[in-house]
Every structure is written in C-alpha cells, then in structure tokens.
Length: 303
Image (cartoon, rainbow, N blue to C red; front, top):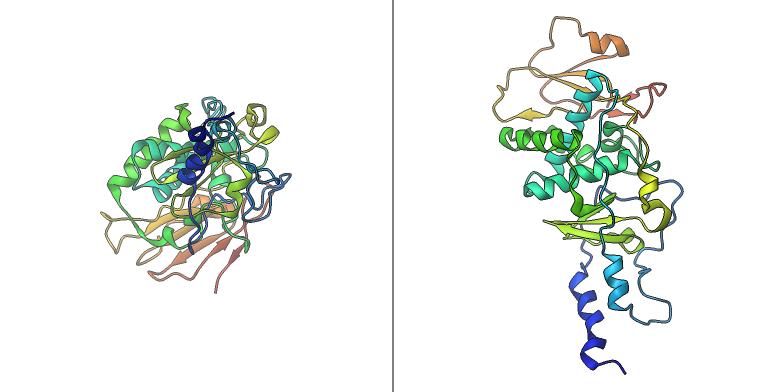
C-alpha cells in the first residue's frame, strides 16, 4: 500500500507546474502551422489518462526532462553575406524576445532558433525561422516580427549583448539546459499546444518545450545548415542614432531606406532584387512573403 504522503506528491507537482490561462497574446513559438504533426484539442492534457488516474512521479519527471543537448551549430560553407544575415536575424530574435532576460535566458532563445533550423518541420535558414509566418494572416512564429516591435528604437547596449549571444551560438556554443526544445512561451500564459508537448525547462520568464516521439528524437535534428539566407534582420533604430540620418534596412532581400531623405547613390542589393523603396518618417505597413529558397519571389503590399 502506498504511503498517504506519496499519493499526494503528484498533485503537488502538477499544481506547481500549472500556468493559469490569461487573456494575452499567445507565444510567437506556437506550432499550429507545423506540417506532419497533430496536436490535441485546446485544453487537453495528454499526460493525464482518460480514466482520470494521476501520472506517477516518474512519468511527470520524464515529461519535463530536457532530453539530450543539441549538437554545436556550424555555418559550414556559408557565404559572407549568409553569415552576416544569419547573425543579424538571430540577434534580432534574442533582442526582441529576451532582452530583459539573463544571459541564460537569451542563450535559451538562441538555442531554440538554431534547433528549428536543423529540424525538417521549419525553414532551413536562420532568417527563415525567425521571420516564419510574418507575412501570413495565420500569424507569425515570433511575435516581434509582426506586432510593430521592429518600428521601435533599439537600446544599443542591449542590442550589443544580444549580438554577442547570437555570435557565440552560431560559432557552436550550445545551451544544454533546453536540450532540443523547439517551442516556448512566457510564464504569464498557457497556450493550447503546451499540453501536447514535453515540458523541458523553465529559464527566466520562459517555459521551453520539446516534441514527443520521433519529432523530438535527436535524429530529427540532423539537417545541415544550407545557407540561402534571403533576409537581413530588420535593423530598427538605435537610441544613439540621429533622427535625420537615414537608416538602411533589408527585409527578405528588399533594400529599404528610412529617414529624412533617400540616398542618391544606387543600391546594389536593391537593384539585384529589382526593388528599391524609400520611406519617410511615418512609413506605411509593409508585408513581405516568407522566403526559404532563392526560387521564391518577394511580394510587397502597401497601403
């Protein structure tokens, strides 16, 4: 017969790990559009059997295990432009997703991005992963790419710290505590998909998750980096920049000027894609098609 205190142990663990739902924007890492993977209905909990019996402590421990650590990432055979673009995009993800987090929290976010690059369910480039869905009505994977955050001024010190984290990650630094996690959300919300995934670890204000079964197996994270970075990270505006100084940006291969006046010099990058855009201080919204391979075209809609 089990001891009374032992029977109560699973209830304590479940209560401690529960995050109550709130009326907030769900995490940008929602897996709703991932092909080949089926999730349970919103609010379901795959860890609790239909009979209502509570899982044992061993089952709970397995459900929150981070699993094996990722292999070091390598920009093998990447061009100079691809390396620069990958660094810009990963820096943006770390900055906008975790600039208020500790170094560990920022490294965890960077690791999730690189884990996705290696998984066949996601785009095969760093920029493709970061900006996935940013031009779709179904929503973006990382909310900063479509919620207006990119229009705000950057904090130079925080951006430099994020860039350092991103650079080390691209050079092979691995943040082992998150394992092969591909999703996360803040502790303030409880998205519907969380019950369908294995909880890995909580770092700062983010809870990280990995897939069950074959999708979460290390063998599913063997895709080599292919390059083909079609975008430079949206540069935003630094706090230490002058208001009258034009800021050059590239969004999915499209050269964009923001500021008082356009540059009189032709832009090689813009001409190579056949598009050049000049914007005033109050630009109209721009939507660009996600680009995962060179064959895909760039679409711009303005209003």
